[in-house]
Length: 141
Image (tube, rainbow, N blue to C red):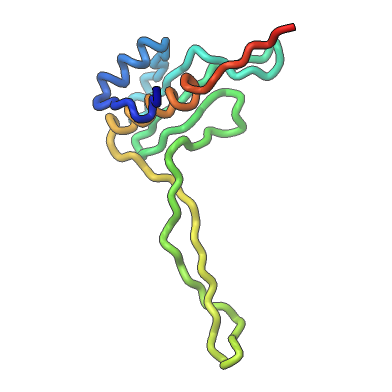
């Protein structure tokens, strides 16, 4: 079953999925006032047998969805990446006919998700796709 094609149509459905999967809302009062919401998965990122950290994700009022797990060097964006419109810069070089050359420059940026409900739905789909749909591996002798 392809979980990304599964329709999650509301924040209520996303929260129900979180409850079923054991994902907790651990948002502090200060974060809530700022429009941030933080969720902790019952899955740990392992860095050795005694060094494990629960996976955490946050949605921000600004439109970002980020992985904010403690062991990350910094929170990284989970939003879809998009190419910006190309910009052209005049170069100091000229072609064989004396005309100035231009350099095309594009950047990759994140597609911001404006609404709280849309961010929650996106996060639910992202978590299912990246942490619950992938195969698990068993180590045996």
